[in-house]
Figure 1 (tube, rainbow, N blue to C red):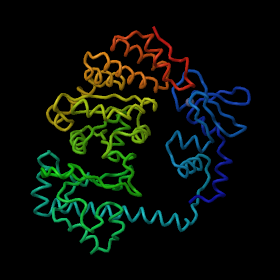
Figure 2 (cartoon, protein in one colour):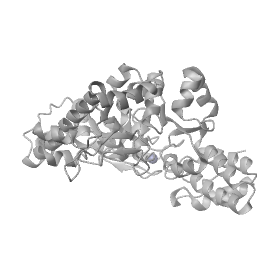
Figure 3 (cartoon, rainbow, N blue to C red):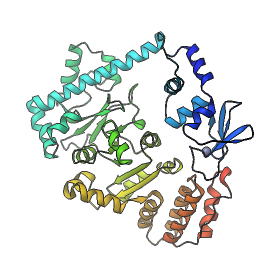
Figure 4 (cartoon, helix red, strand yellow):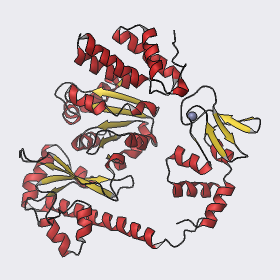
Amino acid sequence: MIPAKTIDDILSAARVEEVIEDFVTLKRRGVNMMGLCPFHDEKTPSFTVSPAKGIYKCFGCGKSGTSVGFIMEHEHLSYPEALKYLANKYNITVEEKEVSPEDRAVMQLTDALYIVNNFAAEHFTKNLLETDEGKAVGLSYFKERGFRQHTLDQWQLGFAMSSGKAFTSLALEKQYNMEHLQKLGLSTQYESDFFKSRVIFPIHNLSGKIVAFAGRMLSKDKNQPKYLNSPESEIYNKRKILYGFYFAKTAIRKADECIVVEGYTDVLTLYQGGVENVVASSGTSFTVDQIRLIKRFTDNIKIIYDGDPAGIKAALRGLDLVLAENMDVRLVLLPKDEDPDSFFKKSGQDAFTKYLDENAKDFIDFKTTLLLAEAGNDPIKRSHVLRDIVSSIALIPDAIKRAMYVKQTSSKMEIEEAILIAEVEKDLPEIKKGTATTIS
Ligand SMILES: [Zn+2]
């Protein structure tokens, strides 16, 4: 905990214009300073900083706040993290004081949960590598997928035995707390194992700690889901976690691009094959929180889809919001009946990367192509597609980009541009009305 006195010191030292000028070029205008907003795309400055009031406000996107708020928003930091960032900038020493009993309890709980997950991961690994059942079922599955020992070790892959009690009994014997085991979903309310007869993929957070597990069933039991995921807990919010991000983040920065696939084994195959800037959404369809996580490392996302159009359509729903995040998102559809795993193995790294580059489409183009293929020549269906695309275009913050998409969609759907512009205009938020201009 940062003492209140230190917080005061930081807040009074951190002049809003100085903090922001590290990221935005500001020009004096009367008592205020103006610059191009870092939170939305703009060509003329509407981002205003008031040194006198100690605040910033953007008249384009409405974002506003103090110096700490700016750092939180811009650097995606929590409040204490932002304070520490500013303390560092102004050479203020932060001596963290004794934490309150409540805070300590929370910290102790999360620490304890990490320890339990570590124990579980070690147990699953041991099962995989040292037991007859693990070797015969789990290890042979991983070997069949082509995963080398180094990959198994690095990603801490494991196996959950079929007996149904093995893990929980051992954990209790080792004095682990039943409440913690249940909170993490490792043990059921009946004190038996949650994961049974499955290969195990630990899910790491950004700092490499195990926050959850995914278990893949290997038998063909129709009554069981193919994948089981740990429930959410104090340390696991599935909407904010991407499988593989911890291992991929350096490569994502370097490549200035993040590749997103659907499956755990897709991530492992690509990573092992040298495409290391790859992640998967774990147990959910891709969320805006996950996009924001990626945004801390790169603005470029390439999402790979496989499977049937209906499934992809469902996955695209909600992804509309990426348009509002102003990131360069491209989507790639793999050839029929291929998934990233199979396609990568068949084509090799170079041909795989080449295919992605040649077939990546922007979100609007991808969505239009997909929906039109489904609608065929049915005029009513085509008008639904048009509505859908129009509402997506209206989400794009940048007027010029919107105009480009209107043009592109107009030619693709054979609809007059003027009609499209009028439709997009209707869907725009109040603040942007009158900006759905055409470009010729
Ligand atoms: Zn703005």
